[in-house]
Length: 235
Image (tube, rainbow, N blue to C red; front, top):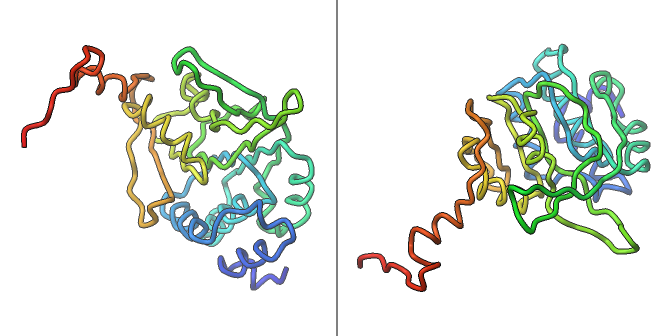
């Protein structure tokens, strides 16, 4: 890839979109939203959940390097060796300097705080005080010759383990089921950050103790659902 193309987001995205494995990259609407968000907030410790072929990590690196910021680190986590191999090969060298790759399997996980739910998590994550977590993995996995595709649970697990510090931004890319669960059970722990892109969802960790409340359950109790009656709103 030519040097002048590296410094241009559109050229970088086109470079990835033209790759035979381009199904592993973020969509064209989220790419500029991610780029602008990183440029605005200047995160230094970034966790990229779901390397794919390296598009997201490359965009984040480009956004920071374009502002002459060099003292940052991106840790990107992937479950498939094939993806890691491709990413290490095709991410432009200048953008790869600040990226560390982690290969680990995807495993099922559950918590008593959220009954009757299973999640997909990475078996091992690096331990750092993150400024920004980008969620686009893990993907589904196979178990007992069956394909398991459940919500991504790493952010929930990290929150319960107190591994997300106040002020950390969390962005969900193609992880709407996870976002809905976070909003239902952990809304007291995050601020919602509006963006110009309605499908580029950003949360910011509040400075408070982790609180797990089933908002849907509480709302149903409030309106008398479990008493067999529902309070009608005034017309």
